[in-house]
Image (tube, rainbow, N blue to C red):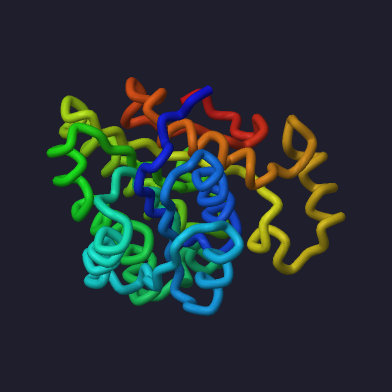
Length: 249
């Protein structure tokens, strides 16, 4: 299937490792000109060299620097035609009432304000050119909240509703916004504090497909949503979770 991504300029956030890196790798393989960002110069340069992408430094806590990131990408590669918003999760806490006001505000900056700052910067050009794809990487927790992740549950859900609202406004201009909801994937984040064997055993017991997801499986879904073939899909949230989510909607 030709996804129509050859030569297109793509920006993928949080792409030095994990799901963001896998998405970037898939888009490079499709022939896109891929910019990747991370807060660490060392990690993003290493990832860019391995992937055949171009690395840029940006910390999603720095909302005011988001337009400058896009400016830098466009100076080097050209107008951004595809944007993948991907950020790490805020701290876990088993007590949803134990978090400080600062914790809530920091999570809001990282998970809502920062992605929207990127969206606001790239959408005018996408609309003018008559083509654009924006894909947000969230979590199945926006449908079925995870007890330890109240900050992620709350703010990722907020961004999903923002995308749904904006998607309707720009749909007639050839621009789509969609959200992926990854479940349990074999990344460093899910393996923190456990072993690969224990994580896989838990997945066998709780995921209908009976294993952890592979990052490249999420990346395949992202690449399709970024493509010209997905032109009639917008404002949607799509779970990629091996069937774990029980909710119908």
